[in-house]
Image (cartoon, rainbow, N blue to C red; front, side, top):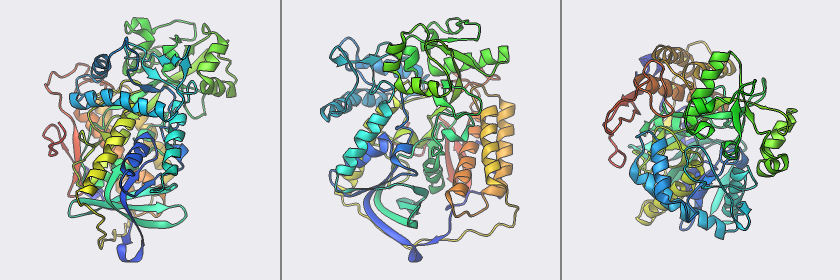
Length: 555
């Protein structure tokens, strides 16, 4: 990764503060993020200590809440955990870490059984769990609730459990500005609460579960809050991040010009839907033997190829051959969303196109969820554990959050039991005042997202990637040097930093692998093991290290 120009040196903290003149909150464990990973971590840690969980928006603003597909786990005796492991590894294109794949696939079964014992109502058919089939899976193993409202049900279930705990506090509408560090150790966070303003939250252990960075792309299924703030804060604090070039694009999002992209679950194709062109041509069989149920990267590239060939803005999902009442019962949310735009799923084709969906890159975390920064743990989409490799298997994300979130909470609890406590310290930060022109933040944000979609999207090219980094560096000269006092500015600064790392990492990966496809380097390198692209801030600059990781717990 090319380092940022010295003029674009990354500030350690985004905001000015003095610990002697600001509000303080103390807690044993701080959890950043209210999705499945954060809630699972908070619940596990609460078994022996006090926990503070903060969310950027409300608990309903997480990516978990809007997840449709379900949770992949082996509960059918005709299926096997070994097959789930193999499917995960196959889709991951050689980049997975075997130990964590085995852990998540095996422990995931126990987490699902825990949920069933807690009375979470998974959909059933003839008294048995209804298991869906999705792309990349050799067997139906995806559990779902409310048809296509699994994330909502899971989020509400875990949130209620957290609220029932007397030692878990929830701060919603609380923005993570930065992680607090002293002598290379994370001691908590600098935050901005909508009601209480700036605060320092001191914690013996901080767990980052803040989600990914999907909103750096114009076309995305992610809610507006998913701007990668936690990963950017960890990078500034000195934590190592990796695999940022691997961004999964979901092939089927509802395309209505001028409207926000709405996800149409892969489970729809698992139920028999076809992807077709306007004339009804079903083209996926000519691209992959699994047709519509090929891995997501294959389907997304096939759609982009057809759009390029036909010069049309979208293709279509055809569900007209599926009995309407059956479809509506299985996918009530999708049916309702289509109806809002005058689309009758029984008679009309559903316009679709791909969009950025899942961030595979993130903060490097080992099998115990520990990061390279002492005091900081990471789990879920904010982390890079090696579970997904170069491409995530469908419905493994909620599974990861359940398993690794619990492990993160348990690791934090173990640390406290071993005598690690809260250690407030005197910290001051005063950024220099910039003499440069102030650019329009809304314009930069919109332009950045358009640039990333155009040049760092589904199909990439070295010349365009280098150009992208150059453009981002130019904008950064006028944005990263400023000190803002609201989330609007902090978000844009975080998005610029992460977009730079994604573009630069993609430019240095001179191969096509998993979700990373370059039309000027279509073959896959035969390195064994494949090299990860890691990044760390050193002396205010983003520095890349291709293969030698300075964190022994991750390989």
